[in-house]
Length: 126
Image (cartoon, rainbow, N blue to C red; front, side, top):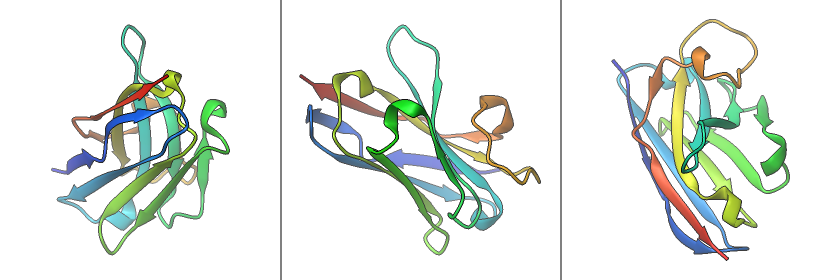
């Protein structure tokens, strides 16, 4: 069993920054692909960013490219999402997820992920 705990969410003004963290426990963290997803009120959950096992393979959804940075620290069993130049449309519940399969390329699809955190709320005011 894997436990994922997100933190770092909050209320911020447009243009501001937040850094989300996701701490993992229960299995070897360095063996999993880690992703961030978000769900805005009334909308389906969507992919935000993903990082491969070593942190060198990253992908982002178009709407956050150039503003968000995903990274990981395998010694601390933690993945991060640095969010800059935040916009009101970034308001959502943000989830981290872990993929322990043997796939070589990180996936943007929810079905690829085995474990999910409870989420941390990010609210961006205009």
